[in-house]
Length: 376
Ligand SMILES: Cc1ncc(COP(=O)(O)O)c(C=O)c1O
Image (cartoon, rainbow, N blue to C red; front, side):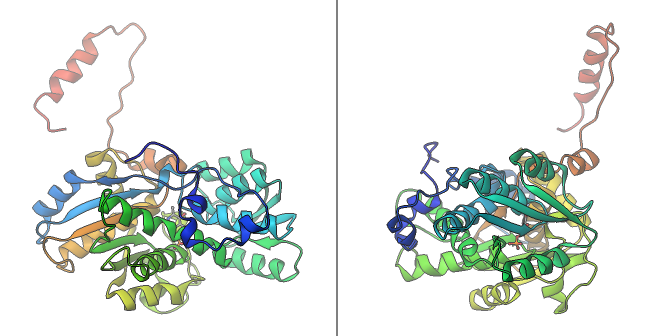
């Protein structure tokens, strides 16, 4: 993996983005998003081999938590905000389960645009709320859920007074497709780009699965890859509108980022599934937490609970025999674990000890001694 910045996704993949923005002479609003690592997960592959009937699976983690605001949303926001600025907007607005608001506030601030965000009250992880506050957005908390917040934002967009930067803004999906390009470039390892056999991804509003599929299709059409992956999307069970084929009025899950009952890009997710021969499934909160713990405890990778839905989906599919043997799978880890410290503390496996200031080394040596016979 290169540690050099690529200068942001719009300049790095300029061939896949129309040149209008540059022509208008506006600078791109970029925080050098993208270029996130694709990390091989050998310990998780071993775990799958031991605990499921699936054989020879190679697993890679696309760690989107290393984007500038800690989530994949930055890829879409660089484009949506650059375009809004070039089009003469003075303010932007979004509804958000948290990550979109952090990205909108950061890019909006950088562009000199006033940023308004509408959040479901009490249902946004602490890290995300802290970001929006420090970046200086104007925050409205609604006594309702994300879907209700988005309805309000759509209506505000129709007044023409403010530009909506949710994924219903087409530049968001366009920006986010760059992650599929990166996955293929990384798997190609400097040679011909290569798609994985399977792509596992969390599904909330369904913008990201739509964007990845667009990216794979464009890379295929350009002759960069010779096959496309099966798209494996996972909703949280309490918010599984697409799986149940109905709007969920009161979506629930501890993975608050995907607590969405009426996905805006529903049809995009269904097309990705059907055209790729993949599936959209659902995972319980218990499955999400188990995957979250395995990612951190076996690979040292800290993602937020919603992100772990991708690996939870992989475990489920491997257990059900839905993955062929000797294949490659990429799990998209959409957001950084630091976003949601409450869930990490509630579900982390660490044993914690309190020492008196004058305890000396004996108590710690005692703990080390007791741990000798225990597996890590
Ligand atoms: C961390 C995280 N994962 C997954 C998702 C779901 O992405 P999408 O709404 O594009 O399906 C979100 C959306 O907010 C998110 O913040």
